[in-house]
Image (cartoon, rainbow, N blue to C red; front, side, top):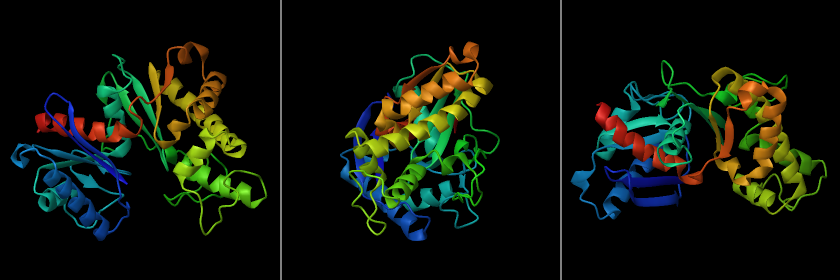
Length: 305
């Protein structure tokens, strides 16, 4: 599913559509459908379409917001993806990484209250971080900053989708939660999702619902993920000395089940003097962080251009 929003120049959300059915695949057909959905949204709004000044599209993986190239998704031609989208949709388009957009949304309209040094941890199907240093989003040289999920942490034989083994994402992400739950159910452990089979596996949203319904096996796996993640976030805190660490993304909706183990591990594995500077909190915008961030980025990038 995708979310599409429209803001005015003041930053007020004028129109928002959440969970529009869409299968995010790296195919030409999926790209065409994305463009059709955006054109359809514009047509359905009662806004004069000539007043639409800029569109920002969030894409997972390696995205260079300056050049407009996407290297992980929709990289079908030698032209920048932003130019291709501009042509297909008929409006100026910029692109950015999904986690960075969520970070910017939280920074502009979420739980940030004047803090200038922030780490946003996006725990969704994958794992990424957004970094704000001295009030500015840090992109890195080519826009590839924040690939936290692909830090090599584990001596395991689990192949990550990046084609390497041992990535943090293989044991601390939504995809890891999904895989571990199915493995443990397969070994006979009990869960309210036990009757689901490999042919009809539960979705990540259904697993999170089971956590919030106090399913013990799901809670146990989420807590283990929180501990592994917290240990690595402790390293980030030691490097960046942030004043705010925001836990966002799909898994953040399990609340204290994931946040408390993260906090415990941070206290255990980072310097007390450094970690006492960092407040750990849950995303305020939740599933709207990305769409709010995209809208705000579209506005700010327009001024830069």
